[in-house]
Image (tube, rainbow, N blue to C red; front, side, top):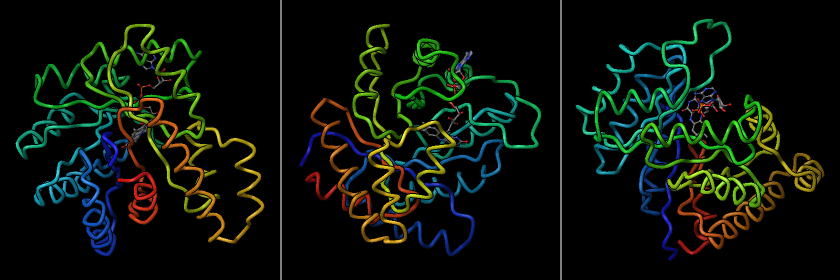
Length: 276
Ligand SMILES: Cc1cc2nc3c(=O)[nH]c(=O)nc-3n(C[C@H](O)[C@H](O)[C@H](O)COP(=O)(O)OP(=O)(O)OC[C@H]3O[C@@H](n4cnc5c(N)ncnc54)[C@H](O)[C@@H]3O)c2cc1C
């Protein structure tokens, strides 16, 4: 058993069937004893109640659940209400994000960047929440320069974040450089790699394009060559992701955060291969 910590991420289900499926997923994943289960939040508040309900249900089962909260398009009053609702429900961990403005939504909101959200959470609720923030080993797509992005990451730490979870990536060197650059400018918080298990190459390519993550050419070419052969895509994806995790653990990553897309199978298999 590896000593590092695992966490897993879900999105809030949209239908009762989706909720049943997710229940089965987190029940299975609970056997890995993750430190927490996080649940995403639709920017602009579109999933606010579903995020809350999912987190409340996981917590009611005696597991630690962490809602994501994004501030884009929102107001201090609305964010305050959400924070107090979570606090009243006994939630102690939160993933604080800026989010992305949904198309058609023009108002950026009162809190412009995640560092302002972190600061606001600390002002409102003191040390109640363990605050996670996002980090980008391949840099955020809107960042002017890598150094700028790093300084903006530092602002989140300075505002009171406790730890960070990265965007997914496939290049362990990018993670290592990012962590070492962060340490060099005095950011000491744990930076946990975000891991994306691969079930479908087309889906992966879409995610990667939208968030600025790079799929290395050798991987892309191999996935493309498998076409509709889902068994080969799955087998290759498992090999690549397991190897990435192994390297990250060897290089001292403090944990692994799995983007499960509400499926247990691939995450369970990677964890099994890693000896969890
Ligand atoms: C682990 C993880 C979980 C996520 N969960 C969700 C989710 O649940 N819902 C969702 O909608 N999205 C989610 N996202 C996506 C995220 O919302 C987007 O990547 C978004 O574009 C940036 O959010 P952020 O919190 O990193 O923003 P920020 O840290 O605010 O950074 C955004 C950009 O602004 C720059 N910047 C930051 N601070 C400043 C500042 N003070 N002044 C000037 N520029 C600044 C940064 O360099 C960066 O380019 C998640 C991402 C990750 C990595």
